[in-house]
Image: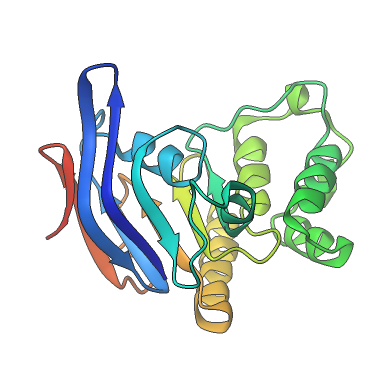
Length: 210
């Protein structure tokens, strides 16, 4: 479980988002909010990509600010519109991220095969379509032994077959490995086969349950 206490994120003197207290047990959470409300900033802060104030801690005492490397190994993040160096291939990205996350070659190959990435494994990112890039980003989010997986607009540019793969992976990681998922999506998640544990709204510069 991840506990968020006295979280705040500012850009200069401008407050973007504040969360006084929130506990995220294993499950699937839909984070809803208007464009520009702070969802992506919140996700990037939770994943350790942006500095923030407050305490982000797992139930065994590992925190973002006191154990940054171990914390980041536990939190995987797929961005809404992923960008990677154009000269790197999907294989090189997978092997690099897989190594940093402690993922076996078998796990790397299984998840890339599931999304069909093995078909363009040797292709540089600069030659990949936005749909291919999305698949790569999603596959990387499932490498290692994450406790939290954050998926920002995971359905964008994703074909029907890949959506099915994604749903199955989410359900497997939640049910078998007790992973917490945070998803944002402007598409209706209720209409999918994905069972949601809760819906949280970003409004008035804070995050709260409906």
